[in-house]
Length: 198
Image (cartoon, rainbow, N blue to C red):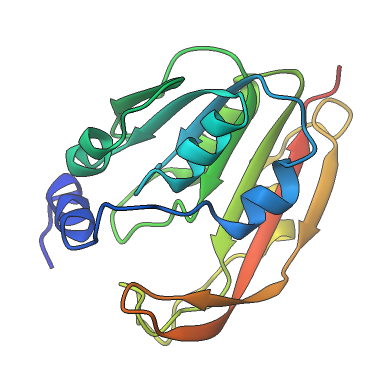
């Protein structure tokens, strides 16, 4: 494995077909009933979430460490920008910040990034964090000793004042996922939804 995070993720995204990306299931589940506003997609990957949000009237800023991912993502109401979240965070205030599977084999102060994301929310805005709770057969992470922090653990690490950032959801549902070659497997998602109080 390369030791350069940008190159690693460029190679991951270059190996995936760019056509017709689908939104993550938990995004659709958690956001469908929200009124559109300004959204920030952290680690936008193939752009499925950003495109889905934009199609529903959201103004989307999509960011990823991979220039391959960012360059593939262009469309109405989407601003795609490359950011290495180890060094910079997109400016602005948002009604929704999403971080789907923002997990990496490289050093990243993920807790700091997510805390910054919570502070970037407007009053009434939501932070949606969806993490892997298990390894799919096609995942880059096949470490049998990998620890997948649950939503309660992630929320505790964020140490946000619950009076200002109340918890709306923290659970670990399962779903059937489809891999890049069409194979399927049952996987666990860790879902954390936090709202910034009005």
